[in-house]
Image (cartoon, rainbow, N blue to C red):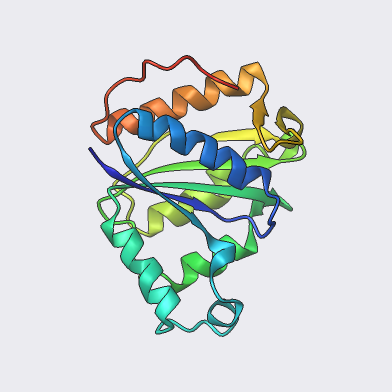
Length: 185
């Protein structure tokens, strides 16, 4: 099956975005894909702040993008755009780092006023980086994502179904098999 790089662009250590991605990673693994989780916040701040293209962590990250067949990009939305942390990473990657890749854009945010951030802020950048296919993405409201005291993630039923659908479309675009899992929250 395909290799998927699952990228969280959240700067927060307790990120709902990252937790949601890790939840969807499990679905992709169940469909036979190798999934590599990656949190942009794990990169050395100096490499990002100083735009150090040659920093070993940036070179290694670019190699992860090159290795992947598909990329899931998740970001919180701030002021109607994807996170600055994600922007910093995308700026440091080679111009066509997504060439030949299938990409699934996902976003989380506090209000439906940000729902178009995927299409108007993120999708054009992914396209300019050469993505071969950008599958339909999904925006999930923060209030629809709950993390229990034990760390378990629960997603409201409507968004759970939508996320399962876009994840399955992404998987199928990568040559994955249809899921036999029930949509889980």
